[in-house]
Image: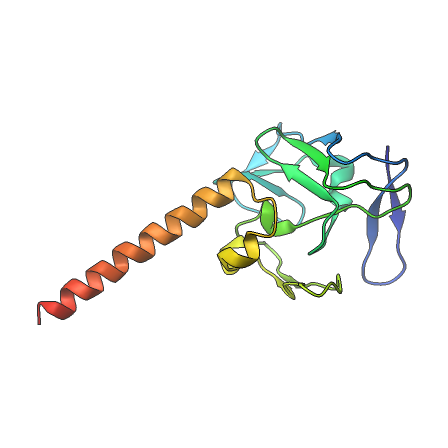
Length: 163
């Protein structure tokens, strides 16, 4: 169902569909037999401090701000976000799984709503993230950041009023 195609130049190998994949079809399972606490260039974050290493052919899936794949870390499955045609490159929105990337990069997808710099969900607005499927562990990390910011602000206000 999937195959790799080598590109010439700096962009490297890409993952493409060998056959048509209908919208909503699960087509790949993310293995979790090898997990580490810190991200690397070729891991997928599957939990708060869990990054899957054994990606197999999935290591060649690229980022897009208009993805055709959803990686659901709860079910550990990849789904077609829309119908995918044979020979079409597969892509997913990296911040949907990644809080902070080990190697941030400039996005070259070219869509009108491109986020331009891909660093992870931590650095994107809630408005931007609302356009995408976002995994539970990323939503939990967003809630944690908001709670911490709120506590910090309350502490600052208290210290200002006590003066």
